[in-house]
Amino acid sequence: MKILYTNFHPRNGGGHATYVVNLARSFQGEHQVTVATPGTSRLFEQAGRIPGVRCMDVSFSTRPGPMLAEVARLRRLLREGGFDLVHVNGSADHRQAMLARIGLRRPPRIVWTKHNTMPVRGIGHWLRARFGTDGTIGVSEFVTRMLRKTAYRRLPMRAIHHGVDTERFHPSSPAEVSEARRSLLGDLPEDVLVLASVGGTDRDKGWLVLAQALARLPDGMKQRIRVVVAGDPPRGALRRDFEALGVDSAVFFPGLVGRPERVLAAADSGFVLSFHEACSFAACESLSMGLPTLVSDAGGLPEVVRHGIDGWIVPAGDVDATEAWLMDRLAHPVPSGMPAAARARAQECFSMPVFAERTLAFYRQVCA
Image 1 (cartoon, rainbow, N blue to C red):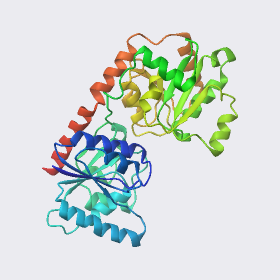
Image 2 (cartoon, rainbow, N blue to C red):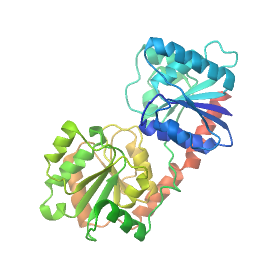
Image 3 (cartoon, one colour):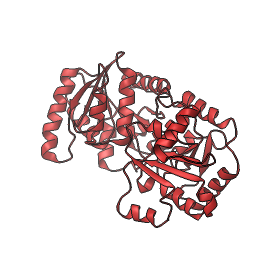
Image 4 (spheres, rainbow, N blue to C red):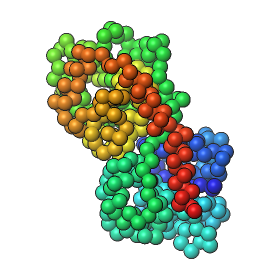
């Protein structure tokens, strides 16, 4: 199969970039894979290192002038590439793919993945659902239920959760845990509880709720907890709100990291406490490391973690519930079977082979 992946993000791209890179790696060699994305993006840089994957520096503007030239270029790419399927990941690239295939003698099918929980409404979505989409993927059942109430409901549709590299994100040995903790946090007493997230530092990611809960604890308990939050260090009002809590000595921001598995290796538990979340690579990666994971009940997160089996679920934004969880974690050890259950959950539901198999099956359904 000849597959073209598109993504409009000119810089980091977040989960979109990880999503496309994972699929490109899964299908390299077996299928002809091309990635069209701005040359300044993280996706372009990462996909360009995958053997056999062709990367094209393509922009997806929303302004009419540049967009006309970009659509013409994309049309040439579709005609010359003879693609069976274009997998789009956002509104800008979706719109251009729809326009570029108009009138082609052999137009490719278009599959759109919805990565977020934003409302799906308006004339743009109606037009794309009617003329520019042959199938839709929701990254969780939550997102797929949203799509079933929109103009896309008449199309083939499937919920396919994220896939993570369970070989890369694997449980750490005691020596690896010690080294990772020392590297990130210095020498720590053995009874210190380390919590980590690689889900980012935006306010909507909910990490400040954990910091607020931590600030409420008595000093003796507070000293037994360290929190690590990877991503762009918080700035502006968010930074001021954090500093006002007085827990600077317990919360660490290592910045954007190239090897998130090394951050997770230092942890006893992972956490993703988002206010809005379609799914979460960070939560899946945490489980894959064998870390029981605390998540909020937002969006698709309750589909990732099973409460009391491989992690815990608390109401989004609930400082009281998060404080109670912290106190319980300090008082009681994690049940002995939880780490193994977390690892098994990731392997069975979120591994790359499972993700790729489900996605390819949907491609074939749409192309049939």
